Length: 454
Image 1 (tube, rainbow, N blue to C red):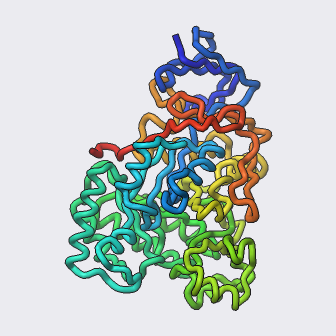
Image 2 (image 1 turned 90 degrees about the vertical axis):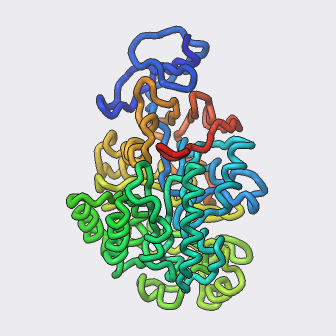
Image 3 (image 1 turned 135 degrees about the vertical axis):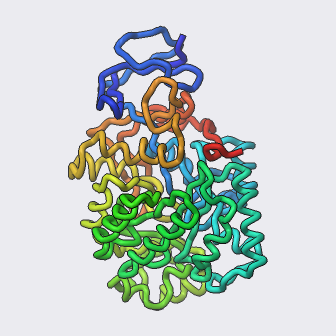
């Protein structure tokens, strides 16, 4: 007997398209797809809603459990927008040690499944190099290399780099800490570019060269904020050219024209506004004493000096180039979401409903089924998750059920965690994590070690 039978929905099957069939779940797995009505302990009746694989966010920023006092803030907003698995530790930064992160997940469970990188910038601090502009010593690099191996043994996906935040982290250092991972199966590297705007292509070239030197796949992070200043087409063409030559590059982007990071970071150093062609008023602050305040020069300088860990939002990118990235068949859609005390950018609560409603439904940038691969199948394949990201018998019963005509994001730059509309149910491991639009407060998520990791 099935644990759950879902009837009356339209199943998103990437081999057959949208099919009007029933779906059965047993022991956390999809165990039936067809037109029959096998016996089940429970039946969920839908009215033509879409039954999709749960969304996979390949690039986000996990909770700082000290700041959140052990609570899950972004995992809850991820769940509300249909995400069942997310990847933490991006942009070179872990918000706590991997050991502490795993301890939290293992002791309390999680609203969603998590994977994680180990961050280069985080490791630099761990070995005593707190100067973002200084190269690491040979001894520090060797220590980081050892710490990388420890993280991989814990199940880390690979290394994330945050070059723009850490100009002292050279190409040679990036290679040096990963020496023991060369060509190793199941490892994925990822990186926040070193330069944006008119030096975007240079950044892509550096990441491609790291991929080649280490014989490892490399996911280029949030191309949106790297290249959407007049350089998106050239950037996509360059990535495609590398891929055609056998370089294992992947790329993600988010569907917003504003990025977000800490106001005290190197990103906002002198010359940034001129480089982006904007003014102080295009920088929005998110926390007290400047919550939802647009900057003046005075406010900008004060925040940089006295509130460096405040998240800021920079309204600086071009919509037509964001759309170009969303439509490109190479590009995986990811949120890059991050919150600090519940404040931040709406992408952490709205990315996937926004992509579906704005770019697939309303603007028709690409065919629906193909577009949905960008938030399910493509990230699953990139991460080596063969049992996720698709609806097939034997796959994990991680599902998002939504009304296509109603789904849309509601989070905005004033209410960054406001949940979307149109998502009725989310299941993780066959269990209702979100039911009738409301969280069940279940902690069904777990840490997923990388493929072949142990």
